[in-house]
Image (cartoon, rainbow over all chains, first blue to last red):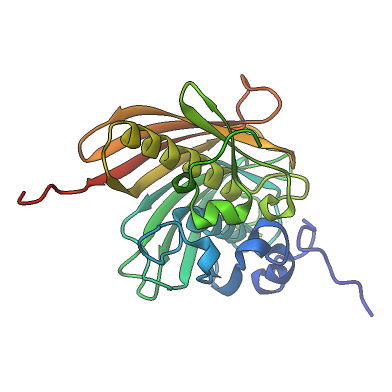
Length: 159
Length: 140
Protein backbone atom coordinates (compact mmCIF):
# COMPACT_ATOMS: atom_id res chain seq x y z
CA UNK A 1 0.00 0.00 0.00
CA UNK A 2 1.28 3.43 -0.90
CA UNK A 3 2.20 5.78 1.86
CA UNK A 4 -0.44 8.47 2.37
CA UNK A 5 1.12 11.77 1.25
CA UNK A 6 1.39 14.45 3.89
CA UNK A 7 -0.88 17.44 3.27
CA UNK A 8 2.16 19.58 4.05
CA UNK A 9 4.24 18.04 1.23
CA UNK A 10 4.89 20.98 -1.17
CA UNK A 11 5.54 18.66 -4.13
CA UNK A 12 2.12 16.96 -3.94
CA UNK A 13 -1.07 18.39 -5.44
CA UNK A 14 -3.10 19.94 -2.63
CA UNK A 15 -6.50 18.35 -2.21
CA UNK A 16 -8.51 20.34 0.38
CA UNK A 17 -10.97 17.56 1.10
CA UNK A 18 -8.30 14.93 1.69
CA UNK A 19 -5.96 17.31 3.52
CA UNK A 20 -8.76 18.40 5.84
CA UNK A 21 -8.65 15.00 7.56
CA UNK A 22 -5.10 15.78 8.64
CA UNK A 23 -5.17 19.55 8.99
CA UNK A 24 -8.40 19.67 11.00
CA UNK A 25 -8.02 16.55 13.12
CA UNK A 26 -5.69 17.79 15.86
CA UNK A 27 -4.46 20.90 17.61
CA UNK A 28 -6.60 24.04 17.67
CA UNK A 29 -8.70 23.17 14.57
CA UNK A 30 -9.41 19.72 16.05
CA UNK A 31 -10.34 21.24 19.40
CA UNK A 32 -12.81 23.54 17.63
CA UNK A 33 -14.24 20.60 15.67
CA UNK A 34 -13.74 22.29 12.28
CA UNK A 35 -14.75 20.24 9.26
CA UNK A 36 -14.44 20.50 5.48
CA UNK A 37 -17.62 21.63 3.69
CA UNK A 38 -16.55 22.38 0.12
CA UNK A 39 -14.09 24.08 -2.18
CA UNK A 40 -13.65 25.56 -5.65
CA UNK A 41 -10.70 26.81 -7.72
CA UNK A 42 -9.66 29.44 -5.18
CA UNK A 43 -11.96 29.04 -2.19
CA UNK A 44 -12.70 26.69 0.67
CA UNK A 45 -15.60 26.30 3.03
CA UNK A 46 -15.33 25.02 6.59
CA UNK A 47 -17.97 24.38 9.25
CA UNK A 48 -17.64 25.35 12.90
CA UNK A 49 -20.21 23.29 14.82
CA UNK A 50 -22.09 24.93 17.68
CA UNK A 51 -20.96 23.73 21.07
CA UNK A 52 -21.93 24.88 24.58
CA UNK A 53 -18.31 25.45 25.58
CA UNK A 54 -17.64 27.76 22.61
CA UNK A 55 -20.27 30.25 23.72
CA UNK A 56 -18.99 33.78 24.27
CA UNK A 57 -22.09 35.52 25.55
CA UNK A 58 -23.56 34.96 28.99
CA UNK A 59 -27.03 35.97 27.79
CA UNK A 60 -27.38 34.27 24.41
CA UNK A 61 -26.20 30.80 23.41
CA UNK A 62 -24.13 32.09 20.52
CA UNK A 63 -20.68 31.00 19.35
CA UNK A 64 -17.99 33.45 20.50
CA UNK A 65 -16.09 35.66 18.07
CA UNK A 66 -12.80 33.87 18.82
CA UNK A 67 -13.70 30.54 17.20
CA UNK A 68 -15.07 32.37 14.13
CA UNK A 69 -11.74 34.20 13.79
CA UNK A 70 -9.93 30.84 14.07
CA UNK A 71 -12.08 29.22 11.41
CA UNK A 72 -11.56 32.10 8.96
CA UNK A 73 -7.79 32.08 9.61
CA UNK A 74 -7.66 28.33 8.92
CA UNK A 75 -9.96 28.56 5.91
CA UNK A 76 -7.81 31.36 4.50
CA UNK A 77 -4.69 29.20 4.62
CA UNK A 78 -6.52 26.33 2.93
CA UNK A 79 -7.86 28.67 0.24
CA UNK A 80 -4.27 29.70 -0.57
CA UNK A 81 -3.16 26.07 -0.98
CA UNK A 82 -6.29 25.32 -2.99
CA UNK A 83 -5.58 28.19 -5.40
CA UNK A 84 -1.90 27.28 -5.62
CA UNK A 85 -2.78 23.57 -5.93
CA UNK A 86 0.07 22.78 -3.54
CA UNK A 87 1.07 23.31 0.07
CA UNK A 88 3.07 26.49 0.69
CA UNK A 89 4.29 27.31 4.19
CA UNK A 90 2.49 30.54 5.14
CA UNK A 91 2.00 32.65 8.25
CA UNK A 92 -0.82 35.11 8.80
CA UNK A 93 0.64 38.61 8.83
CA UNK A 94 -2.48 40.71 9.36
CA UNK A 95 -6.10 39.75 9.66
CA UNK A 96 -9.23 41.80 10.24
CA UNK A 97 -12.68 40.50 11.09
CA UNK A 98 -15.81 42.70 11.15
CA UNK A 99 -18.59 41.15 13.17
CA UNK A 100 -21.84 42.20 11.52
CA UNK A 101 -24.25 40.42 13.81
CA UNK A 102 -24.28 37.57 16.31
CA UNK A 103 -24.73 34.07 14.89
CA UNK A 104 -28.05 32.40 15.59
CA UNK A 105 -28.52 30.69 18.93
CA UNK A 106 -27.10 27.17 18.78
CA UNK A 107 -26.27 27.72 15.11
CA UNK A 108 -23.29 26.16 13.35
CA UNK A 109 -21.20 28.77 11.56
CA UNK A 110 -19.86 28.32 8.04
CA UNK A 111 -16.70 30.07 6.88
CA UNK A 112 -16.01 30.67 3.21
CA UNK A 113 -12.59 32.07 2.30
CA UNK A 114 -11.34 33.07 -1.12
CA UNK A 115 -7.70 33.65 -2.03
CA UNK A 116 -8.00 36.27 -4.75
CA UNK A 117 -4.34 37.12 -5.30
CA UNK A 118 -0.93 35.63 -4.69
CA UNK A 119 2.51 37.10 -5.27
CA UNK A 120 5.93 35.55 -4.66
CA UNK A 121 5.85 36.45 -1.00
CA UNK A 122 2.24 37.23 -0.07
CA UNK A 123 -1.29 35.91 -0.44
CA UNK A 124 -4.46 37.96 -0.09
CA UNK A 125 -7.65 36.47 1.27
CA UNK A 126 -11.19 37.65 1.88
CA UNK A 127 -13.91 35.67 3.53
CA UNK A 128 -17.29 35.59 5.17
CA UNK A 129 -18.85 33.67 8.01
CA UNK A 130 -22.57 32.92 7.93
CA UNK A 131 -25.07 30.65 9.61
CA UNK A 132 -27.07 29.50 6.60
CA UNK A 133 -27.52 32.44 4.26
CA UNK A 134 -24.30 33.71 2.63
CA UNK A 135 -26.12 36.96 1.76
CA UNK A 136 -26.66 37.68 5.45
CA UNK A 137 -23.16 37.19 6.88
CA UNK A 138 -22.27 37.00 10.55
CA UNK A 139 -18.79 38.35 9.82
CA UNK A 140 -16.47 39.39 7.01
CA UNK A 141 -12.70 39.06 6.99
CA UNK A 142 -9.68 40.34 5.10
CA UNK A 143 -6.21 38.96 5.62
CA UNK A 144 -2.68 38.95 4.26
CA UNK A 145 -0.49 35.89 4.63
CA UNK A 146 3.26 35.78 4.03
CA UNK A 147 5.10 32.78 2.66
CA UNK A 148 7.73 31.36 5.01
CA UNK A 149 11.19 30.54 3.70
CA UNK A 150 11.64 30.36 -0.07
CA UNK A 151 8.63 28.25 -1.01
CA UNK A 152 6.97 31.26 -2.63
CA UNK A 153 3.39 31.30 -3.84
CA UNK A 154 2.26 32.68 -7.18
CA UNK A 155 4.37 30.34 -9.28
CA UNK A 156 1.80 27.86 -10.46
CA UNK A 157 -0.81 29.96 -12.22
CA UNK A 158 0.34 29.59 -15.80
CA UNK A 159 1.79 26.11 -15.49
CA UNK B 1 -3.09 30.71 41.47
CA UNK B 2 -2.97 33.62 43.88
CA UNK B 3 -5.48 35.86 42.16
CA UNK B 4 -9.10 34.87 42.15
CA UNK B 5 -10.46 35.47 38.66
CA UNK B 6 -13.67 37.45 38.60
CA UNK B 7 -16.15 35.02 37.10
CA UNK B 8 -17.35 37.43 34.45
CA UNK B 9 -13.88 37.95 33.00
CA UNK B 10 -13.89 34.57 31.27
CA UNK B 11 -16.46 33.36 28.74
CA UNK B 12 -17.31 29.67 28.32
CA UNK B 13 -15.06 29.72 25.28
CA UNK B 14 -12.12 31.26 27.13
CA UNK B 15 -12.45 28.87 30.06
CA UNK B 16 -12.74 25.91 27.74
CA UNK B 17 -9.60 26.89 25.85
CA UNK B 18 -7.71 26.99 29.16
CA UNK B 19 -7.33 30.76 29.42
CA UNK B 20 -6.78 32.01 32.99
CA UNK B 21 -6.08 35.27 34.77
CA UNK B 22 -2.36 35.29 35.61
CA UNK B 23 -2.37 38.43 37.71
CA UNK B 24 -3.63 41.99 37.97
CA UNK B 25 -1.22 44.69 36.95
CA UNK B 26 -2.12 48.34 37.57
CA UNK B 27 -5.68 47.19 38.12
CA UNK B 28 -5.91 45.43 34.78
CA UNK B 29 -5.91 41.64 34.31
CA UNK B 30 -3.09 39.80 32.55
CA UNK B 31 -4.33 36.59 30.92
CA UNK B 32 -2.37 33.54 29.92
CA UNK B 33 -2.78 30.17 28.30
CA UNK B 34 -0.16 27.43 28.41
CA UNK B 35 1.20 25.48 25.45
CA UNK B 36 -1.54 22.87 25.39
CA UNK B 37 -2.62 20.92 22.28
CA UNK B 38 -5.87 22.91 22.01
CA UNK B 39 -3.92 26.02 20.94
CA UNK B 40 -1.61 24.38 18.39
CA UNK B 41 -1.64 25.29 14.71
CA UNK B 42 1.54 24.72 12.72
CA UNK B 43 3.35 21.96 14.67
CA UNK B 44 5.04 23.43 17.74
CA UNK B 45 3.37 26.83 17.41
CA UNK B 46 0.23 28.68 18.42
CA UNK B 47 -2.63 28.81 15.94
CA UNK B 48 -3.32 32.45 15.06
CA UNK B 49 -6.91 31.92 16.11
CA UNK B 50 -5.89 30.83 19.60
CA UNK B 51 -3.57 33.82 19.94
CA UNK B 52 -6.34 36.17 18.89
CA UNK B 53 -8.86 34.41 21.17
CA UNK B 54 -6.56 35.13 24.12
CA UNK B 55 -6.22 38.77 23.06
CA UNK B 56 -9.97 39.21 22.57
CA UNK B 57 -10.55 37.78 26.04
CA UNK B 58 -8.09 40.32 27.48
CA UNK B 59 -9.80 43.14 25.57
CA UNK B 60 -13.31 42.38 26.83
CA UNK B 61 -12.07 41.80 30.36
CA UNK B 62 -10.36 45.20 30.47
CA UNK B 63 -13.65 46.84 29.52
CA UNK B 64 -15.60 44.81 32.09
CA UNK B 65 -13.16 45.85 34.79
CA UNK B 66 -13.38 49.53 33.79
CA UNK B 67 -17.19 49.51 33.58
CA UNK B 68 -17.49 47.66 36.87
CA UNK B 69 -15.21 50.20 38.57
CA UNK B 70 -17.43 52.98 37.20
CA UNK B 71 -20.45 51.18 38.63
CA UNK B 72 -21.98 50.74 35.19
CA UNK B 73 -23.83 47.77 33.81
CA UNK B 74 -23.39 47.14 30.12
CA UNK B 75 -23.40 44.46 27.51
CA UNK B 76 -20.38 44.23 25.22
CA UNK B 77 -20.63 43.24 21.59
CA UNK B 78 -17.81 42.81 19.11
CA UNK B 79 -17.58 45.28 16.23
CA UNK B 80 -14.23 44.23 14.83
CA UNK B 81 -10.71 43.11 15.54
CA UNK B 82 -7.53 43.61 13.56
CA UNK B 83 -4.62 41.40 14.54
CA UNK B 84 -0.98 41.86 13.60
CA UNK B 85 0.98 38.64 13.89
CA UNK B 86 4.48 39.91 14.63
CA UNK B 87 6.36 36.69 15.31
CA UNK B 88 5.46 33.02 15.58
CA UNK B 89 4.28 32.14 19.10
CA UNK B 90 5.86 28.92 20.32
CA UNK B 91 3.84 26.18 22.01
CA UNK B 92 4.63 27.62 25.46
CA UNK B 93 2.85 30.03 27.83
CA UNK B 94 1.45 33.07 26.06
CA UNK B 95 0.34 36.20 27.95
CA UNK B 96 -1.91 39.08 26.95
CA UNK B 97 -2.93 42.40 28.44
CA UNK B 98 -5.19 45.10 27.09
CA UNK B 99 -5.12 48.89 27.30
CA UNK B 100 -8.28 50.89 26.82
CA UNK B 101 -7.59 53.65 24.31
CA UNK B 102 -11.09 55.09 24.39
CA UNK B 103 -14.10 54.31 26.53
CA UNK B 104 -17.01 56.14 24.96
CA UNK B 105 -20.76 56.10 25.48
CA UNK B 106 -21.51 53.66 22.70
CA UNK B 107 -18.22 52.13 21.75
CA UNK B 108 -14.73 51.48 23.04
CA UNK B 109 -11.36 51.11 21.37
CA UNK B 110 -8.91 48.70 22.94
CA UNK B 111 -5.31 47.75 22.13
CA UNK B 112 -3.96 44.36 23.17
CA UNK B 113 -0.48 42.86 23.15
CA UNK B 114 0.50 39.21 23.52
CA UNK B 115 3.98 38.11 24.53
CA UNK B 116 5.98 35.09 25.66
CA UNK B 117 9.38 35.17 27.35
CA UNK B 118 10.30 38.71 26.28
CA UNK B 119 7.64 41.22 27.03
CA UNK B 120 9.21 43.94 24.90
CA UNK B 121 9.07 41.67 21.85
CA UNK B 122 5.35 40.98 21.44
CA UNK B 123 4.24 38.02 19.34
CA UNK B 124 1.03 39.73 18.28
CA UNK B 125 -0.93 42.92 18.79
CA UNK B 126 -4.57 43.71 18.18
CA UNK B 127 -6.93 46.65 17.97
CA UNK B 128 -10.56 46.01 18.84
CA UNK B 129 -13.68 48.13 18.54
CA UNK B 130 -16.39 47.03 20.94
CA UNK B 131 -20.01 48.16 21.13
CA UNK B 132 -21.20 49.11 24.60
CA UNK B 133 -24.88 48.74 25.35
CA UNK B 134 -25.45 50.26 28.75
CA UNK B 135 -28.49 49.32 30.79
CA UNK B 136 -31.14 51.96 30.03
CA UNK B 137 -32.40 53.70 33.19
CA UNK B 138 -36.07 53.21 33.98
CA UNK B 139 -38.34 55.65 32.08
CA UNK B 140 -35.64 56.71 29.64
